Image 1 (cartoon, rainbow, N blue to C red):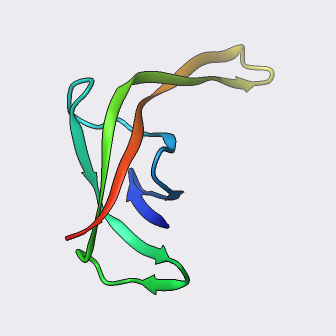
Image 2 (tube, helix red, strand yellow):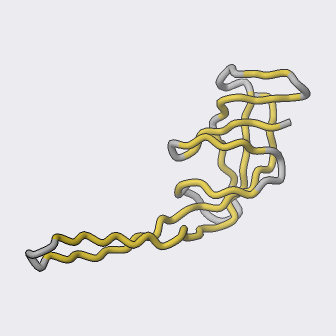
Amino acid sequence: MYAIVRCGGRQQKVSVGDVLQVDRVAGEVGSTVKLPTVLVVNDGDVTTEPGRYTVSAEILGEIKGPKIHILKYKSKTGYKKRQGHRQRYTQVKITGIDKA
């Protein structure tokens, strides 16, 4: 059994026991969150009804993504600008896909 969940503007395929990175979710380490389902496949039976299944996940902690370097440059004017960015993610473990 697996489900397609929507979290942070993206959709990801998950099954029980998977560990994945989602955009920051409010909550403490060890607490559980519910992720909205888009599609659930159970032994070939596809369900697209929202609210029929719930996906629960446990928060494992926060991590940072890779560093992104941003460089802006204009020739002949002496303009240079350098920036960096690291996106913060929450690492969650899928604990169950249950009927509501």
